[in-house]
Length: 238
Image (spheres, rainbow, N blue to C red):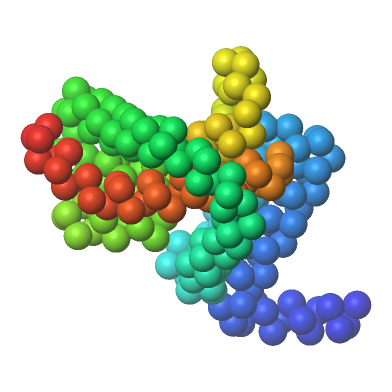
């Protein structure tokens, strides 16, 4: 017990505490998801956010203090995205056979996500910086925050919207595709990655490697296309 207490004292005085809390929260969340047989509602990201948020509120810890320790996880988003190229290489023949349908779905999904968000925000009368922050919500956090900041938006608000989009998509994508009777693993994965970026891709990999591969492709291509199209869409709808 004295050894465990010494570890706690050490962690509590360093930023490593919040990195440890983040990782522990995800491990607990993943166990819960596994116990539920990976039910869509038991999304480990959502559960981990709830656990971590509860701890922050209970301890009165400002987000800045938390992020000082947990930012290493944020840094790993880049390498984790690059690693998705490995299954892409393994299934390159399958990808090439599906290239034209993928590109059509990419353009349609990218525009639908951006235009619907911007139009809805305009109807609600939200200020311009908020609209800019919401527009890139369907791409991975690093890209979305960069696009938002460069156009005068709030990167923090963008990060929140990205997570809300990802978690919502991760929960709804499987039941919705089942309801639409879409069984093709390629289509299911591509839809998950396109609509729910990293969270959707993680969910797709839980289903099958083929679905995860196509989700990763969709996530990467959507990030690139969104960065190009967001300024044009905002200018066109403003």
